[in-house]
Length: 98
Image 1 (cartoon, rainbow, N blue to C red):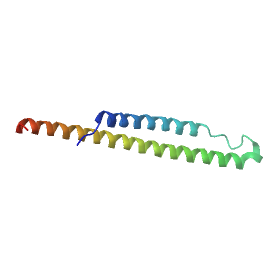
Image 2 (cartoon, one colour):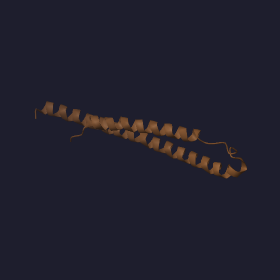
Image 3 (cartoon, one colour):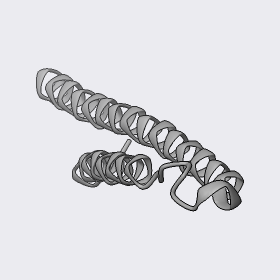
Image 4 (cartoon, rainbow, N blue to C red):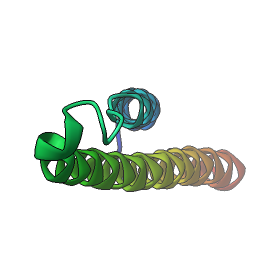
């Protein structure tokens, strides 16, 4: 079994970076909401819909960030498992003289 564990670890780190970026995007979206009365009664419906959309997208970005964090964990665990299997195989070969 051959796996480039440095690439897998790199993938894991990249997932964390993507999660951090999405968390920042979500915060920016939440901060972009506008007071419902900013355009008076004429624009209240529009601003309510805009704010609702901004908050929905912020929630989705947060959910995606959480999935990237989970992917980071999975990739890191997989890389560690490959490393462990490689060490165990090496020790077995050393003991048996193959």
